[in-house]
Image (cartoon, rainbow, N blue to C red; front, side, top):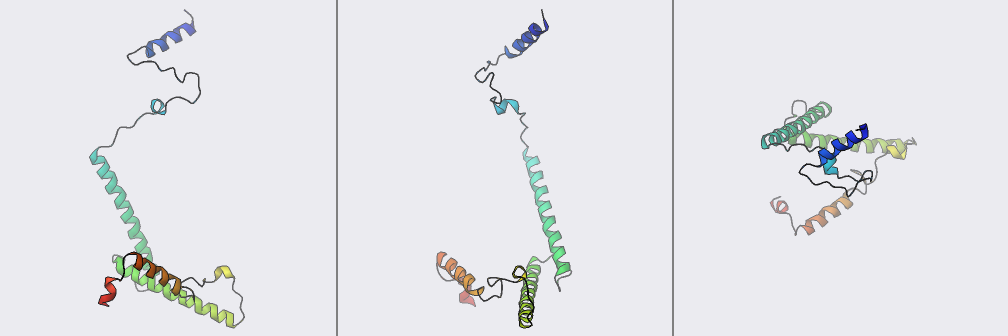
Amino acid sequence: MSKEDGAESRIKSRTSSTEPEDNSNAGEPGSGSRKNSKVTKPRLTEDQRNFNHKDAENKRRTAIRERFIELSRMVPGTLGQEKSEQVMLSKTADYLREMMEEQRNLEALADSRGIHIDDAGRLKDEDYGGPRWKQPNMEQYEASKQRKGGSNEYEEND
């Protein structure tokens, strides 16, 4: 018996088990079933899924907490208040609004003195405080109110 005959007999003995032999794709490269070529991973248990979910949620919360701490160092008047998301977001929005107004004032001052500012560095008219900012946004707001069915219940209380 030659080496080739021995190899063939071993292959035949493996395929002659209780499973039928599938020769439908024989000789076609890359046409084999992916299920047969992949090793399937066992499914996670309920405890493993719960642990993975809790771990991912803790990582997400930690990342958010770190960003609030970073904001508290950058926004005046917020140091030590990073645990109050409402305070942080409110004061950050106020600070950004002030910074944009200051930038608009500086742009106007530069224009009055003939100092050129590259358009890429300027605030756009559609940005906060610009001449076209309020009206388009208010139109979007009013349109969304109309789609939702009329008046806002908070307007009646104000």
